[in-house]
Length: 124
Image (spheres, helix red, strand yellow):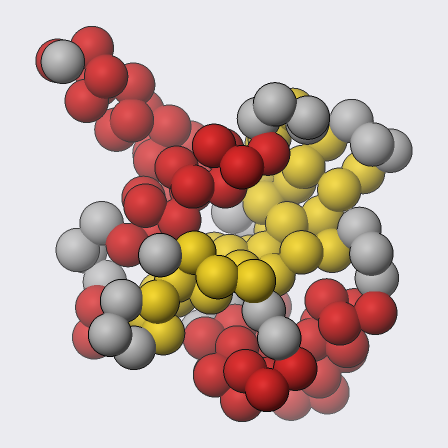
């Protein structure tokens, strides 16, 4: 289930975001978390089953686009469809109000999730 990030989840969120290549540096990671906490156009969500297993971050641009800028899944839970579920939920949450897309960092993964989603819908 997708849950909205709260300050008390900071360590978990930082741990998950640290798996993204551009978030390896601690200072950069702290800046990113601060941006999610203070910028009303940045939205961070965590994927929770029994534990928090993933994170997905959105940046709203010009009240038009919702840009997926972070997608991260705990390495021990990868290849289980968690990233796919997070992308589907974000699409569901934001598609009514924004054009959902991805930035250059998340584009490849986001596109793959879209293809999988389209295939599964066409099989129904």
